[in-house]
Length: 133
Image (cartoon, rainbow, N blue to C red; front, side):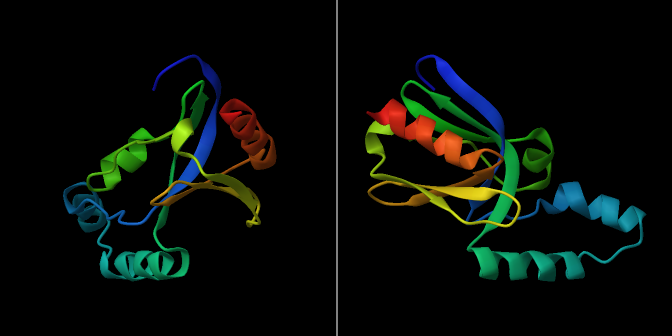
C-alpha cells in the first residue's frame, strides 16, 4: 500500500470464495471427534445468504488505497486467502449499508463491489470519501 496510513482498524470483509483449509481444520475436528460435515453445511448456508463468508482482519486507509488484510487465524483456516487492495482512483462509489450490530461499507469499482464491516463504518466511509477528493 502506498502513502501514509490515515487509519487502521479491525474489520470483517466479505470473501466470495472463502473455503476452509482441510489440513488445518480436519485434525482439530478429528481430535475432538466432531464431524466436519455440519460445519461445511453451515458455511454453505452463509455463502448462499451473504454471497460469501465474512473474514476477520484489518482495514487500512492510506493516501492512495483501501487495504483489507485477513488476520492470522483466518489465513490459517482458509484456503488461498489473501489481502485485497483497492486503489482510491478506482473507486466509483462508497456506500454505507445497514447491518446487524455494525454497518457495512460497499466500495464500488468498475468490476466489483468490495464489502467490509466495522465499528464506526460511517466515519470510515467519510474518511475514504475525503481522501478520494
